[in-house]
Image (cartoon, rainbow, N blue to C red; front, side, top):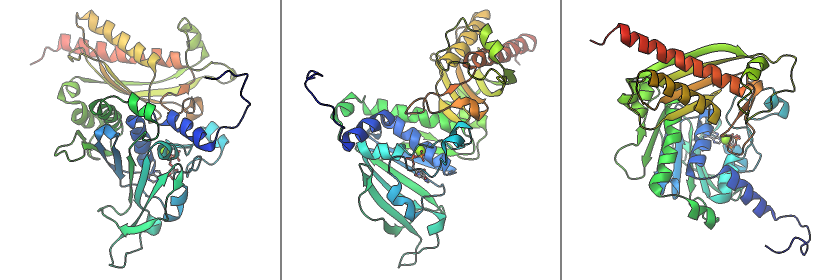
Length: 392
Ligand code: ADP
Ligand code: MG
């Protein structure tokens, strides 16, 4: 780089700004898959089908039976900060945004690093028929935030009344360094699959399928009728499902709990600033495999208020209590754990990272402790049951 003392300050061209910003939201095919899945869920879809070509690098196509996009909204679809979801910043602060999306950034970002196209049919357009008298849908394509041509009407190819297909092609075609940093097609596909598996099991009531283009069989296939346990069985297999214990806890945490656990550094949210009323209700529901499960790798799937997120602190707490409880029986098993935390939305900040992969919430460590004890309790109970009720 040239010396900072020789150059004048100048604004970056918009195209550079947009591409840099897009790179933060779109890190790889799996981050696109997560955003598109969440858009489909926001559109109340119950069936979501994903097709991948070259691990999503050549094509990531997602089709849903959600409410669709009005043809008149198509010009703004990939415009940065254009959204149908967020009305005011206050609504976001108060936790009133009940959708995954709220920033209008995902599709815009995708269009700055890939070729985006859409086929959609919205109820408002649903009475329209083509000249041949068949149901009509709209299609168009986007590049760098802009719609490339006016939407064209085409025959609607699906059985659902409304819905949307979004295709993201040639990701990182214009950012060669990013493209070169991608792993093998198999690895990228497996990351996409992991996101889809998590939502397929954490969101019963929604059926999700994933397949590679041209492949005869699905890599993942769930239907909307499955219970939570049945979905886990379908997605993660019988070995996991046969060993599942229920984890449940409904309780309240406060700053006092936090002080008790303050020896661990709180990495996430500075706790303070609302001393007056800081006690917080929360609940955790989910499953963990018992010490009978012969897992070699642990798998921790976490939802906070229905959003798939990561929390190193919570994962560590659960894994460590699981290991010590297994240890009591002389067993060494790594857990599968799926947990859904429900917190007052006004205490959850989903806006801390561009990918929304991390969230900050109040009393993070205290919650991790409580969840860990719920896990311990579930495991100890099941150990005791096995001890007194030998298996037939
Ligand atoms: P956000 O989700 O934050 O609003 P996105 O860029 O992900 O931003 O999407 C922009 C807009 O496009 C959404 O607000 C929504 O109105 C529309 N949209 C995107 N995907 C779908 C879909 N699958 N079904 C219906 N509408 C969609
Ligand atoms: Mg979105």
